[in-house]
Length: 169
Image 1 (tube, rainbow, N blue to C red):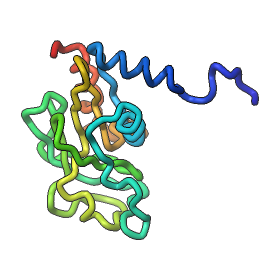
Image 2: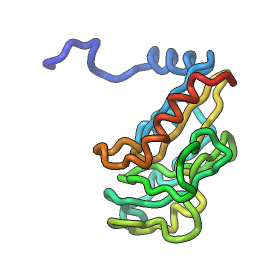
Image 3: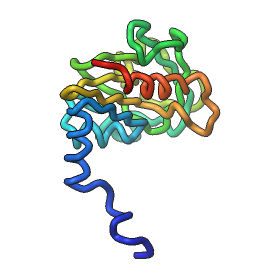
Image 4: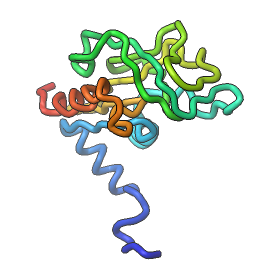
């Protein structure tokens, strides 16, 4: 109760509608980490978080460095190494047959440093997706590219998404 009502409560129905209109009219929405779950649900994207509803006993990654393989044909992966270390902290992993997968988990062990239980649940899942919506796009980043300013190698993911927002479709 210490903030004015207009600054609390989230986007609401009108805000989600405005966000959808923005993207469908040619805008770009970049959703980082758990914000991707909001975009998937609220914009009814044809993507599923493969870790949604999975119990901690089956999959647990409280904050670790994992590796993904980038797709060099995607502009989102421009300038990134083929194997990219990412910061994963209770993040989503995507199943999709639509859009372009710019980075994904391989079939081998993704853990580079930290703790990961149930890592096989990540096999073949997408970590970075460019999803068209109307004349625009939603970039789903299933990790934290800007985490504590420590992961300079993943900053290009965020910058590429921003640069791509100015590109003509």
